[in-house]
Length: 509
Image 1 (cartoon, rainbow, N blue to C red):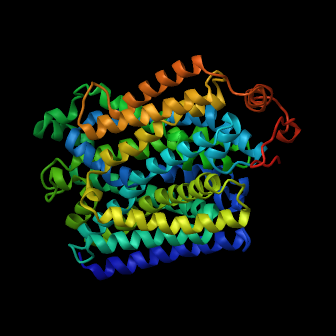
Image 2 (cartoon, rainbow, N blue to C red; image 1 turned 180 degrees about the vertical axis):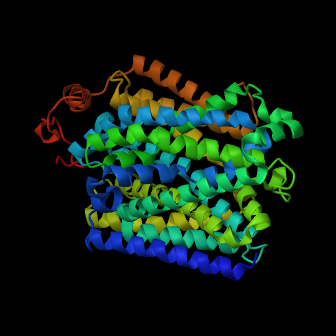
Image 3 (spheres, rainbow, N blue to C red; image 1 turned 90 degrees about the horizontal axis):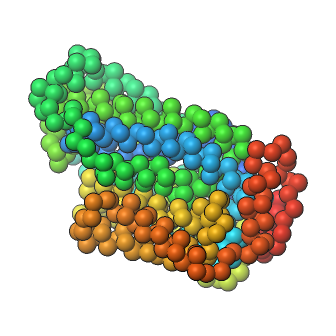
C-alpha cells in the first residue's frame, strides 16, 4: 500500500483529535485547578465515562494482541471475557466507595486516600511507585503496537521508529493541552471509531470465509485451536489481572473520582460487561481464527501474528487500510491518554508532594503534572525503541496488570476490611511485588502465574502482619467504614457527612 494515502488519512484523523482536545481545553478554561486537570472537575456524566472507560481497555492489546493470541493459541482464550462481568460488578462494589471518599475529601490520586486512611506517607509513596510501574508496560504496548501496524500497512515506508514518534507526540500533545477532560472527550470519539472498525472487520472477514463455517474450516486445518486445552491457571491469571486488578490501577481509580455522582457509576457498571465483552472477545476470536484459513492472511506467521489486522487489509483491501491504521492508533491513544495523565499526577501529588514534605498547591501540581507528562512520554518513546519494546503484546500487558493486582489488599482495607493495618498493607504489598518479579524474571514456575502467586503471598502476609499489629485509628474507621455504612444505599446527600480528623492535604467539599 502506498504510504501517501495512508498518511493523508492519518493526518485528517489527527486533525479531528486535536480539534476535540482544543474544544475540551477551551471548555475547561485557561486556569485549570489540579482537580479540573486530573479528574475533570468531578463532573463526568454516564455516556462520556462509559465510553472513556471502555476505550481505555480497547487498546492495541485488543485490536492487535488478542487477534494474535487467538491465532497462536486458539479458542480457549475467549474465556478471558469473563473478566468484563467481574469488572462491572467491581465498578459498583468498589468504584462507588472510592467516588464517595474522593468527593468528600477532595482526593485526586489513590495515594492521597491511602495516606489519609492509613496515616502513612511510606505506604502512599509505595502505592504510587507500584501504580506507575504497573502502567508503564501497558502504555508501552500502545505505542509499539500502533507503530508496528503503521509499518506493516505501508510496507516499511513509514518505519517503526517514525510510528513510535507519531504516537508519542499525539498522546503527549492531547494530555498536556487538555488534561482529563480532553482525554475523556477524545476517548469517547476514539471508542466509537474503534468499535466501528471492529464491527466492519468482523463482517468483512466472515464474508471472506463463508460465514460461521470458519470454525469447521479451522477444525480441519488445526483442530487443537478449536478445543479447550484446559489452561486453567493461565485463564485465572487473566481473570484476576484484568478483572480484579484492573479497577485498582491508578487511571481507573481516578475515573471513579471523576464521576458526577454514584448513579453515574451504577449505570456504567451495568453497561460495561455488554460493551466490553463482545468487543474484546467475540470479534477478535472471529478474526484471529479466520487468519488460520489459507488465503485469508497469507503473510501471517506466529512471529508476526500481532499484526494480523494490518496484514489482512494490506492483502485484500489496501484502500481501506489507512482507516484500519487509524483505528489501531485510536485504540492506542485512547488507552495511553488516561494512563499517562494518571501516572503524571501520581508523581506530582504523591511522590513530589511527599518529597517536598508539604501540600502542593493547585498551580504547582498542574505544572509538575505537565512536566512529568512530557518526561513519561519521552520514557515510553525510548522504551518502545528498545528490542524488548517490540515483544508480543499480551505478555507485556500481563506484567502491568499483575503488578496492579498487588494493590488490591491495601485498597480493600480502606473499602471493606477494617482489620487490615498500615504495617500489614505495607508488608503485603512489598512481598507481593517481590514474589511477582522473582517468578517473572527468575524463570520459575509453580503452577500459577506471577501475578496470581504474588497476590496469594501478598494477601497472606497482609493478613498475618495485620493480625499482629496495631489497627488503623478510630478516626479512619469512622471516616471510611462508618461513612460507607451510613451512606451507601441511603437516600442522603454526601454534603451531610460529618468528617473526623480531616488531614491538611485533603479538603472537605
